[in-house]
Length: 602
Ligand code: ADP
Ligand code: ASP
Ligand code: MG
Image: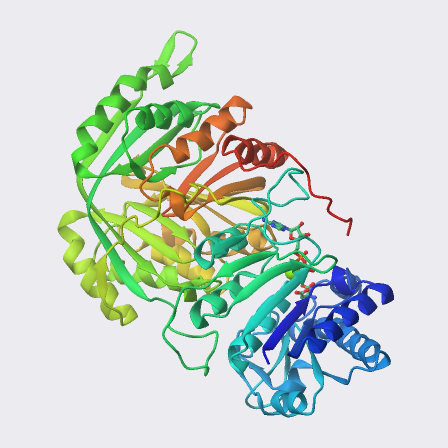
C-alpha cells in the first residue's frame, strides 16, 4: 500500500461539480489500495476576491489580518471536499494547517514551514480516513498561536512539505493543465508537454514566471528527494515527472530553513571582454553573439546594462584560451555596431581583462531569501574585494573579481557560509539533452537603476542589504562596465529588476540611502517584461544565447538588459513586446508541436 499526497489547485475545486470530480478521483485512488492525504487550495479566484476586499476596507492592510482573512479560503474547500467524500461513502476528515500542526516561522504572508506534526495525520490515516488538509497555511509554533500563510501559490509547498514529513511514496500536483509545458500553454498555443524535467530546471522556470509550481515546493522536493508529478485534474494522462536527485537524508526539523548555501564554486579560467557604446537598437546582441558562436567561441556569463544615452555596454566572459579570438571578433565587429549621430560617430571600444575569476555561492535554500546575496556582497566588501560582474539566479549568485583576490574571496565565503569550496562542475549532460527545456515570461517585474554610485567595494552590499531587509528579491543585477568621473569621483551605474509590487518600496528605500551612495540618482521603469530560457543542456554548448537574441532581433524587439547564469538566459524587453518575444524564442528552439492541446478556460 502506498502513501500518496495529492494536491488540487483552485480551478480544480472551483465549483461544486468540480469538487465532486476531485472526490471521485480521490475515492478511486483509495480503492486502488492507497492511503491518501489531500491538500486543496481555495476555490478559483477566492483568494483574489479576499485580497480585493481587504484593499476595499484598508489602504494598507496589516499582514497579520491578511493571513486571518486569506486562510479562510482554504477552510471552505477542505470542508466541502470532505463532505463530498463522505457523501460517496469514503471516510474523510478535513483539517486546517493549525489542526495538523504545520508549524511556521512568524513572518506573516510569506512564512516558511519549520516543522510538521505527523501524529494526528497518521492516526486518521490508520483509521482508514482520507485526510483533507488546507494548503497555503500554518501556525506559529511559539508564543501566541498565530495563523500564517506561505505566500501566493503556496499550496504546492504545503503538499510537498507534507509528502516529505510523512515520507510519502509520491506527491501528485493536480492542476488545470496536463503538466509542465515548454512554456505557458495559455500564451503559446503549440507549447509541448514535457514528460519530465529536473528540479534544477523547474526551480529556474518557476522562479522566472512559470506559475505551474511554487518554487519553494520544488526546493523541498529537491532537498528531500520527494517524487513529484504534475497532472491534469480532468484527464488520466501521466503528466510531467519532476525529477529529484538522489539525496542524503536530512532532518525534518526546520524543513524550509536548511542551510541556504550548499557550496562555494570557483572558476579560475575566466577572462572578460566588454564592448562599450554599442548602439541601443534591435539586433546588436544578436550580431555580436551570433558571430562569436559561428566562430565556436563558448561564452559563459553575458550581461548588458541599461542604455546610457543611446548606447549600451555588453560584457561577457570566456575561458582564457579564447580571449584573443573573442577580442578579435568584437573589435572587428565594433564599427558595425556604432551609433551614428548625423555625421558624428560614437565609437565603440573593446576592453579586455585577461585575468578574472568567477566565484559563486550555490544552494536551493537561497530562494526567496534576498539577504543571502547581500551577505555574499558584504563578505567580499569587508575583504576589500571589488565586484566586477554580478549574475544571480534562484539557486546561484556569481561574481567576477580580479584573479589576485581569488584565494581570499573563497576563504571568506567558505567561512561565512560554513561550507567547502570546489571547482564549478563542468558539463556532464548527454548529447540528447535539449539545450533549452522551457521558456518563461514574467510580466510582473520592474526595472530599477541607480546612477553615479561611487566605484568602491561595499556599494552593492549596501544597496542589496537595504532591499533584503524589506524582503525584496532582486534579480538580474547588472553593473555598468564604464566608470565615469562625477563630481571628482569615479562612479558606476547598477541596474536590476524587482517584482513590480515591490517597486515603490524599493524606490523609497533607495532614495533614502542615496545620500550615503554619494547622491546617486535612482530611476524606475514599471513597464518591462522578462523573457528567459532555461535548460541544463545549454552548459558548454556555444550559441544558445545568440539564437535567443537573433529570434528577438528578427521581430525588431529591442533588448534592454541581458543576464545569464549557468542554465538560463534572461532578457528584459518592453512590456508590450513580452508575449511576442516569448513566442519568437519558443519557436526558434523548435519547442512547439504540430498539434495543439486543448486547454480548458479557467
Ligand atoms: P493551480 O490553481 O492548480 O495551482 P496555477 O494557476 O497556480 O494552478 O498554475 C497553473 C497555470 O500555470 C496554468 O494554467 C498555466 O497557465 C500556467 N503556466 C505557466 N507556465 C507554465 C508551464 N511552463 N507549464 C504549464 N503551465 C504553465
Ligand atoms: N489560494 C492561495 C493562492 O491563491 C494558495 C494557492 O492556491 O496555492 O495564492
Ligand atoms: Mg498554483
